[in-house]
Image 1 (cartoon, rainbow, N blue to C red):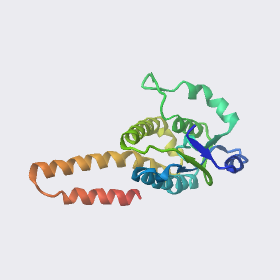
Image 2: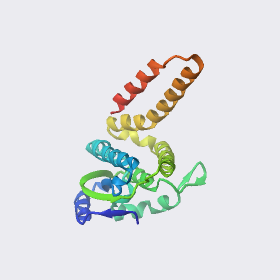
Image 3: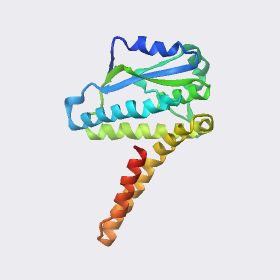
Image 4: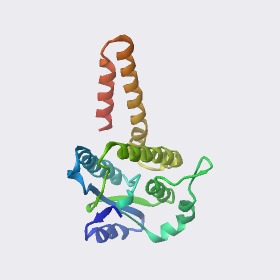
Length: 210
């Protein structure tokens, strides 16, 4: 309802499905309302990086960790095998109804299928244009990331070591950034000194992640 796909997206994703080892493939996402605000322009940049750096690197090693919902294709025979697990998502004993794209991707990987990124299969989706809806969206996505990382941890030994590094960085990076930022503010408030070392730590973490 909020996404327009290019006319050739289906044919380009179908080409990946000619390999029976591929269970899912995703295309490249762009912000259709990029020019609405400074925030939508930043989100469009974020999407470009997430697709053409993160997903492109993951597909090089055989496993895109989240085939994004607005532009993804799944092998029907594989989906039917996983449908019951997918429709009855539970986390810590409670029904879970968020992050369905990441969850289905993890199920595909658990079933032994590859997941791929196709950069020239392009879809434009509406993104939040104000800060509060964006933060709510990011909170939902973060919950999904941490939940499905826990569910998929046992997959990592069977995947390329790069993917283990990527998953660890994706999950620990934001936590370390939050702790570092709180420590910097506390130092500034309690001692009145500039937290240079904390700043350098954040810069170093950002460079390592990049």
